Length: 120
Picture 1 (cartoon, one colour):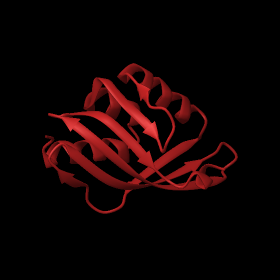
Picture 2: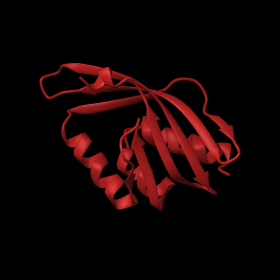
Picture 3: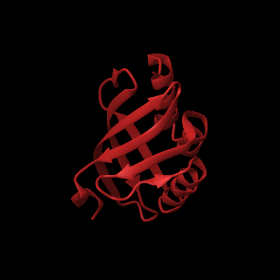
Picture 4: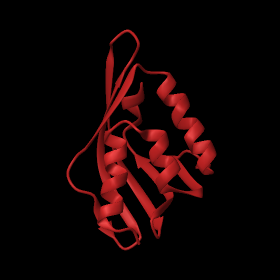
């Protein structure tokens, strides 16, 4: 079960734009991430590489957590709003809920829930 301090530290890394570093520090080696109903991606290195790829497609990505994280034992839920700024300056906003299962102080499973029309 993660402490509130650990969950807040992960959120601070994300809000600071240190997405890859957050995965490296707070995710288990065999962690998985899943977008809605898509197949999960498994393995911290794969998750970090995927994050780098997403980041390379945008001039900037800004993350803002909406309200507090909800923690119940090994489970954490957080609502996020991401603003993606393309090289030409156009922006897209994405509102999502991240549902995580933790083992101790590491995320072992994460699933993102969002309306797929936001990515169009």
